[in-house]
Amino acid sequence: MLLEFRKRTVGIKMVFTDTENLIQAMLEQQIIPGADYTFIHHGRLVHEVTTGYSSVVPVKRRLAQGEYFDVASLTKVMGTVPLTLWLEQQGRINLEAPVSQYLPQIKDARVTLRHLLTHTSGATAWIDQRDELNASELREAIYNNLTFGADFNQKVVYNDYNFLLLGFIIERVLHMPVQVAIQKYVLQPWGLEASSFTPDPHQAIPTQVRNGILTKGQVHDPKAASLGLHAGSAGLFSTKHDVVKFTLKMLANENELLDETTMRQFEDNQTTNSKLLRSWGWAFVTRKPHQVLLRHSGFTGTFILLDRLTQNGLVFLSNRVHPQPNLEFLEYRQKIYQTFAKEDF
Image (cartoon, rainbow, N blue to C red):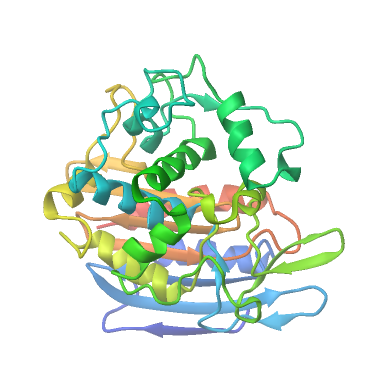
């Protein structure tokens, strides 16, 4: 039996039917407790749904509109990417400059800011007892243990360390914690008033149960938890309304932060190796002359799909890590990507 859900279909006949069927299948099979999602068709919000539960332990509680989700790695594209590109527009950083120019602790002069933005740096690190370190200890451990190996400029390897370094660079340039900078220079100008790195726990839906404790309003990612305000990879909490507002900013030709030239380059391959495909922060689902579908996800069960050419998009928020991470979600998410691509016209 389908879960009862609240939806609003605006203006035209429902599109993306096969994509929604996959979402409903996840709910029927209890792969996720609930979901808050919106379809965008040709730049218009056409279908909004809030369904299922925000928590299933210790008691079941219905998911309500306007609740805060830990959006996890969506922090990268909602905060760190636009702030980095804005600083580049201002001439305050250079994407082609070596990271070592901004962070002398990084000795490998091959690695540029562009490599970090496109996850082509090959960055990797093994840090003993990493999750037990405080912010200054973890930052120092990253500097001391980070390497750029055989994958440098040869593979796209998604890694949080790329965006942690970008966050450290932003801090050097703006002289403030990266999350404070994101709030000041990105979230506020874009009117994302319901997005915060310090949400009211009573407004946040729970994530994982750890050591018998249900976490709410606390960042799920352990590196971001250790780094606090200094994490450029995760830590943002937001509502569906704000993530949709952000997605509409991304679909626009320009916005308060990024000019038209910058925005149009999201469709381009931004790697220095033409065999590798990656936008600024975003991955490509498809890249064709009349369809460039971008995606980004968060570990907690969030993702955004958007195509600036067709003006279509999907904002999807869930807490698939509640009460424990569900790996079946990852298979369904990939099916949703591919099915949305077929319905993206």
